[in-house]
Length: 108
Image (cartoon, rainbow, N blue to C red):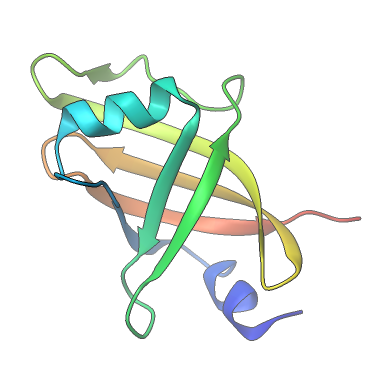
């Protein structure tokens, strides 16, 4: 298995919502509505930003109050990192747009 995938699959790591042009809760909500978010693992050299296609059934937004920018979102989605299919799981706090996450390799 790829070394980066292996490292990010062991335990939780600091993550943040990677948003453009501005890092706002509204921009995160728009990304969630499109079912595609960018998550950045900040503890890797230079950070590792991943584009994640959300799985709406596995993700959870019930604890999120986007209007008041409080609560948290539980984001789950699949992607391919360095030729390895993985599931990205991240919990993001709406006040800071940061949280923790990890990868889970998907068995072929």
